[in-house]
Length: 94
Image (cartoon, rainbow, N blue to C red):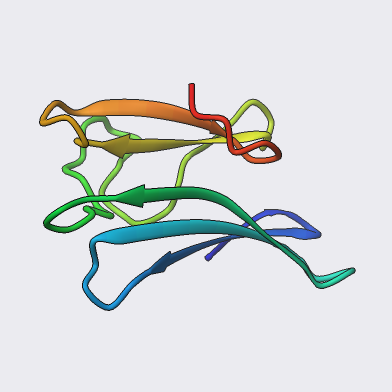
């Protein structure tokens, strides 16, 4: 879990098999829970990647961009490593 702002929490949830990652937003002020992003793999979903820069990808936090309106997600769904920007409001992956 990580705070985006004072009233918005970003939650990462893995299933028991660890092959599906679901990312939710939660607003404590009105108890609004919203599914934003789902990633599925045949084997497992990696949460932590090697530290690729001095600013780090080595923990489980999702780097926030665009003034907290999007997060970055690194994945290897097609056997190649890609970084996607995911809009927090719409769930659109760019």
